Amino acid sequence: MGFLTTSGKSQELLNKEWRDKKKTSIQFYHMLYDIAAVEIGQHWYWSLAGFQIHGQVLVNTWIVFAIILVVGFSTTRDLKALPETGGQNFIEFFMEYMRDLSSTQIHGSDSKRWVPYLSTLFLFIFVSNWSGALVPWRIFEIPNGELGAPTNDINTTVALALLTSVAYFYAGLTKKGLNYFGRYVKPTPILFPINVLEDFTKPLSLSFRLFGNILADELVVAVLITLVPLVIPIPLIFLGLFTSAIQALIFATLAGAYIGEALEDHH
Figure 1 (cartoon, rainbow, N blue to C red):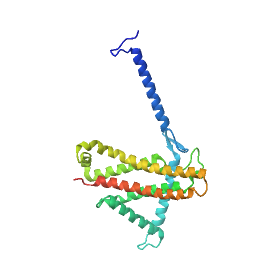
Figure 2: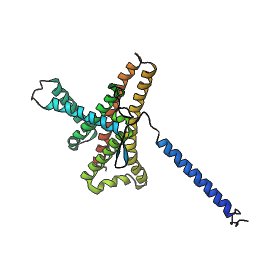
Figure 3: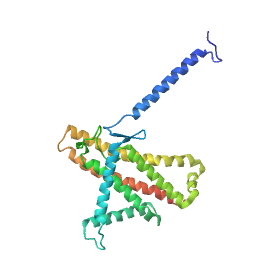
Figure 4: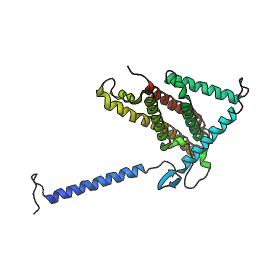
């Protein structure tokens, strides 16, 4: 007969219950691992120092960088006081627009120093989104995978969101020093947990909004092209181009708003 505990259960029975709970917990974690391993599309992996890296994301990211650099150098290599080419006109219009966006979200003289960051962020996301909407990447065969927009991968959008988090922490700390952290107890210390949580939800909302919209757009177009290869997908492709541009603008605008909030003086 097993030893009885104060609750009336034998030690053997308690051990059995503990083993059952442990088995259930292990099964639960296995299920979470299986869910985390679910992939949409095929991925081409590179092995680097024991880690698996999405090779097709890096390849397309380099392509996007190359496009931006080529367009940037070709339109600014011979600048004139009075623009004579459409390329210079376009670049000047774009920079004027980004200066207005920056000054709208970041007040005062600080807005000018953040124009390069917001412009680069917008350009990278815009070209990445359009590369997925315009170019039929799947016609290029690569080992065990397929190419696609860099922003179609959660790793890219999370990296951009974390970079923005670093940017607004840097902005606040360089202007206010350690006094920047006083914002967590304003207007009342009771809101401290909520204010801290807000800094964690900002990159989450930025990354998942961009990733979800681009992924959904590409999936819808891919399915329709498979089912109805003619005519019907064309309006959705144009809608995807519009949505891609809006998503780039929203990301850059929110990044500017977060930086402006970090620089703001609270009274």
